[in-house]
Length: 219
Image 1 (cartoon, rainbow, N blue to C red):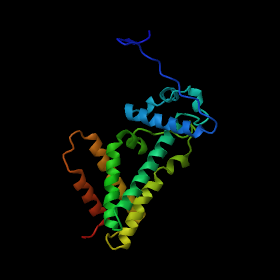
Image 2: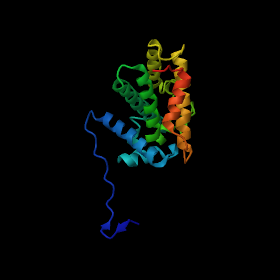
Image 3: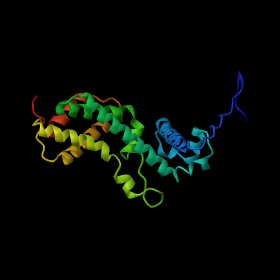
Image 4: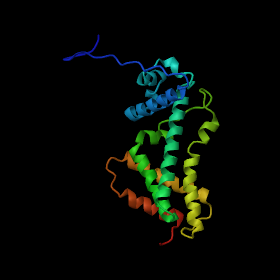
């Protein structure tokens, strides 16, 4: 039965306008955005289907196939775009922090935690909390997965390298120490998300983690 209200029958959702020639990339981005919005709304990767994404975009489900062969490919594109946005954010805060590697290090870690807090469902998907694709039964490859986030973590590696070169911290392997520091930040972000009444100062804990892991020297 058609849904009605005091103002009369509800208007059906209008179909998306057909793309002009050469605008296929716009539809691809619309599909990715729709999937990300569904993830924000539901917190459930399984709610993101070809049908649900098509409905949100306003297209027929078969219109997705020229852009994505299956649902995991859409999810991969969502995660890739979120990592690209995270990398852009981290590089921008490095620039804003000026030329002091110590301040850059604090800025990168704090911005990472802020990103996790402001995009909880996308963050969990990026780091495997929601999205755990199985290779072999979809279009994804091992390379698709192992390369995720590598350029974003490189920002932290570069900052630690500069910090050590400036004599501000005592590390010997920036790549390894960056992973160690990231794992600690990730643990803090996760606990902050799952504990309803987080009883500690997130910033002071983050600063303590940074200082201890990198053996940051006094200013």
